[in-house]
Amino acid sequence: MEEIIGALVSFGYGQEEVGGTAVAPTRWLGKYDFSFIPKSDKIINESSYAHLAKESGIATIRQYGEGEVTAKIFDKAIGDFLKMVAGQEPTSTPVAGQSGAVDHVFSLLNSNAHPSYTLAVKEGGITDNRYPGALLSSLSLEIAVDDYAKMTAGFISEVGASASNTPAFTQENEFVPSHANIKVVAKGGDLDAATEIADVRSVSLEFNKNPLRKEAIGDKKINPRNGRMEITGEIEIYYNSTTFKDYWNNDTELAMRLEIENTDVTIGSSTSPKITIDLPFMMIENWEPDFGADDLVPQTLSIHGLYDASTGDFVDMTVRNTETDYADPDES
Image 1 (cartoon, one colour):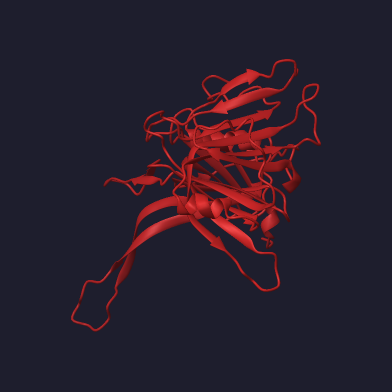
Image 2 (image 1 turned 60 degrees about the vertical axis):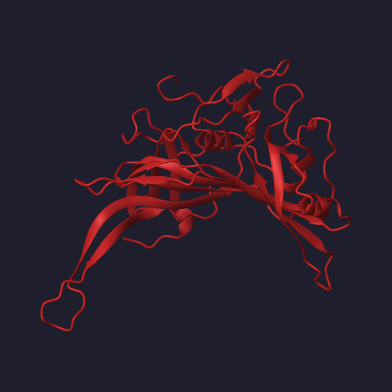
């Protein structure tokens, strides 16, 4: 059997109709980095037998899959991943006057039992597996001045099994730094009317679902469940005023929008693929400048998306593309 390079590893996924029952992938993802692999928890036998040797065996107690995949943000695939974040299908509505263009609005399902997925991993000609019961553990979105807009998705799953996968990729629209902008206003302010922030070098957002491992005696399986969600991020901006320093120092309650729109592509008659993520309640945890002598000084903001107990607001996510819907498998 021949050696392979990492580019020959293929990754796909599909939502399960019955949790933990493997399905064929419905989308294959073009990727950069990949680290999802089979894993196991083991215990070491340290029984003593009137001998100085400390260890006399190793036993496996849990088997599962875990790791990450990094890819460009694609205009259709990102809807799958925001659905994994939200835990339920979005409300999909055709855009008025834009034939073929659809807005998908995602809202968070307030439950610890979000739908599971099967992950397909084909490692060239070496192995071919499907991992059922997979849960998205985290999703990070990153836009910087020197690269494509990227995402990194982390997963944890039940143990994999041999399968026969046939990777099949489709071309989707991508995003570059000039397609992105952010807006920040006082909490409760009008993000639609707000001015885009100038001089942003990079922005990242991470949705951490803090997965829980449901384990029981009688087998070696884990059954992942999503825990309490955190939304954090970083924004790097050239330092030319004390605006954000003052927001941080004064514990100012803010709202934020990240918008990524590929205006180089037309869908419908005159609109474009777009991703909009609103944090209706956001605050800055840390503010830090970098006074390197030979560079323009940046300031880095560490931010948190927060839950507003008075309104129930936490996060609003919308994707515009030509996908008809992101229906659950029993409805498709």
